[in-house]
Image 1 (tube, rainbow, N blue to C red):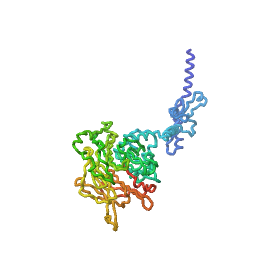
Image 2: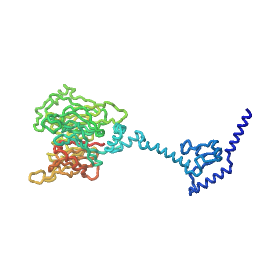
Image 3: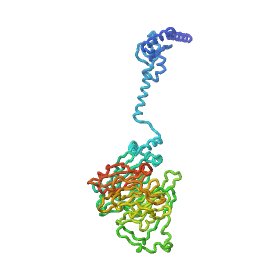
Image 4: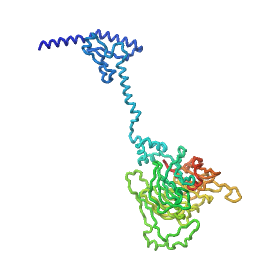
Length: 560
């Protein structure tokens, strides 16, 4: 047993003596390697493997990095038998004159493999951003770019259609004005196309919708990012065609959302109307009381524009105190409150739409008034227009009052909180041509009117007459009209549409001349600066439409 241990120790000492390397040999080999590296690299910087030889042989750098760099950087240790056979020491990375740089090439290979692994991730766009960051980027896009961004993926479409996104876009003033032209007629049929004009980029767009196909003589009102289509007519014999011989008058209301290109219905009116005159206002009080009026059978007959009926033939006791005491609930007060009260204050604004006048189912002019509350989704009939007020031609909201102007140059206002009409007597009336009905507009809590008046000739036969459009402003304190500006175009359109948006007034004219339908879009800024109208667009839409579009057109302006 002892002899075997002694024999093993003797063999171990022999192997250690074989593997031992003198310091002089290591020093001489390292000097040779340094001289060789300096000859290869003139700058004195070598990237070759140091090939340091220690006891047991092999490359120390290769031994420590072999597992990380794979086959290229792996340095295998020589076995004792190979050392004995070779009777010397060889670098692990190969002979001394080899061209393989194990250390530097291993680093290059490592970075190359990392770049190969990361390349598919970059090409596949595997970069994920939080939803808040994505919303902040998308909310700043213009509408045309936003509509294209919704086609990227379902997630972006969902993020850009939420109420929170709409509120962010509205509050941070990233919206620009858009004009929507409805009621176009092509080849005798009511077109299903809606023409939208982007004021910021000065470009027209076309939106196709089958919902309004066949409907004409309707009115539109804009509330936030939606357009309300109220009333209208459709042909009974030739559906889709502009045929007034046999028509059906509608009392339904449709809502169009340009941001989502979707439609939905809301509550219908009490009476069917075509071309009702609309007004929109925002109400801050959630407990606003709207006074309704009970409709009795002995209500006075409707006065038409052709055959008027004297007040003598009406009920002489309609204003008596006995009648009011007999029917104490004929005029109840109804408080309309929102369905879902929102204490957090997230976009709980309430809007009212007032529909006045229009033409009924039997082609008779109406003098009734209805109010739509967006919070309760309900129409309520309110007090009728004042007696002998005339046919309403234009309405608008200004400073909490609903103003109405008639074809007979009467001005009245409706107080929503008190629930009654009252006349407004102005000191002077702007001179106008009676064939052109005036339009009243509200901008920045100021009341304006656009009318046509004679500039030369005063309309007398045998003289050269010249008519122009003028813009007037009503002084709400002294109740007198003041002239502001003159429109540059001649009044060729009998149904010119003017709409207001913040400090801007937009006018759309469309008329036929020399066998061609022309259209003009003008703009006026009431905030300050030069009091001049500016042409925004000319002859870009109407060249494809019929001349009947001049009478059926209607315009709404939105901030999108």
